[in-house]
Length: 226
Image 1 (tube, rainbow, N blue to C red):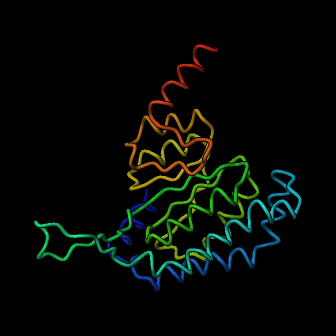
Image 2 (cartoon, one colour):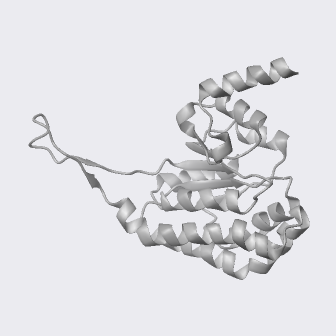
């Protein structure tokens, strides 16, 4: 896909690595939440019949808090972490440097289409990655809002939104991603888990944080029950 090639090219330039750039993108996401607040509420009401109060508490505030936390701590997170030396490294300069993964994919969920889509986006941006965002097609109004409005705030060289159904998502997963954030139903997560290398997938739903062993056992149980 040409979009992925562009993101990969931007990543190779090191554009997303500076603190200033990450802060600018996080602030742009803040502006999206502020300026599109009413649109977000209308979209969630249309998709899930969520009242404004519930949208505020379960979707928007959680993302705002994550943004505030990232902006307040980004400088500290980016610093090299000094580590203790041993006899072999006594004369060396020993530290841990936190590098971005590269081009990452975020697959959102339909039941909390703002919270479970934008929350991992905050972390991905703060870590200095280029991002492909795939909102859930089941929450169609929110998907359209994110696809049309969010790119107006983010850097198009390092960020893209893909509106896709199951078939298109399957083709999307044929591309190489350095990391994948995903929350979804059990079957989809299981397929993703056995298809991709374990370090490449981050399950952000507490319900679906599954080990490979539990995944296989649960799948066998499902077959037996059927």
